[in-house]
Image (cartoon, rainbow over all chains, first blue to last red; front, side, top):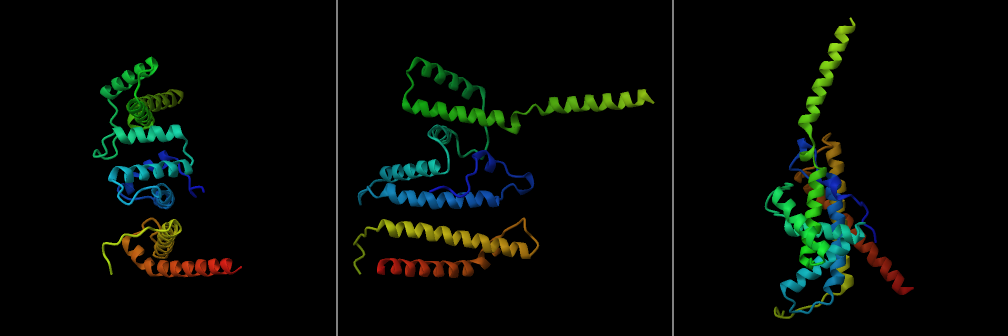
Length: 169
Length: 78
């Protein structure tokens, strides 16, 4: 079983400025397909649950189905770990912001040190994976582009071009 | 009817329901897109488009369920 429209996560993250607040058709299609497969997997992961299953058991079965659906969509275990780590440790109440800062950077280095020492717990492994994913997303984002420098260079080149044209006359 | 009685759901039934929901949603989207195209507003699909598409999508779903039901019957008979 394959998700019909495997879309890289980055492709659905950024919407055109003029349509901000709206859902792109491709995103909607992908989500619909994801939900279908999620429900189908939940039938499987829910079958072993007792009639008096508590919320934790139900949530665990649901999360297992999420993982199976992500695997089905073409992601590998490593990518899923990064994704889960990021979602587990980011503040979802802050709307779609990549808040990478010195504090998070320092925390990541601490975790890397402990990873090298072999003292990282499973929870910390997930945190490190999440922080790494968040950092990569920030590095790749427009927020991190040196736009001011690029504008300055463009200005200089434009001025240089017009000066040399005038000097050639 | 005994309200306190609980039921166990056949996995085939749960899977079928998930597929029907997805099929219905897909059909709503397809018809809504066609309506938006006809109105020369291909960039925007609205709630009104979805509302107008519901009856066609429901009819499609009813037919699809009937078809799968009869094909299952044929398979069982064979």
